[in-house]
Image (cartoon, rainbow, N blue to C red; front, top):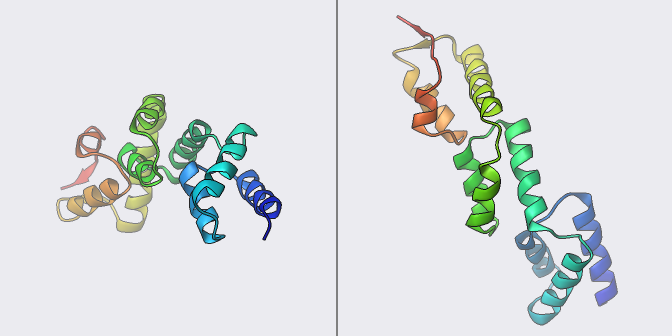
Length: 150
């Protein structure tokens, strides 16, 4: 594959959805492109606006909050695994609408109670564990009003 063909393929890959630098480098490695050649292609993509880690972080956070109803902890971990700078992550995590975030916790709680029944002393540990796997902290969960069955 020529450099032009590789660049064209990677441009299509980036145009399909927002990609971070890490994802593009992984894709380039899968195409057996590494070293200075990969760095040159990466720079061209950044210059042409195909890769923008800041835009990627905003899109990732928005998608995980709105569609997946993830908590901050899980979002932060996901972005760190993508090699995103902590400062950039923290900058945009602070912009999350706190009311929407609380509503998301309530929505996850409602979904859980629909499939597991009302919250009781026997299953509250399972509920907490579920909310924590969604990325919510113990303090955030404690702040949610749980209607427990006695």
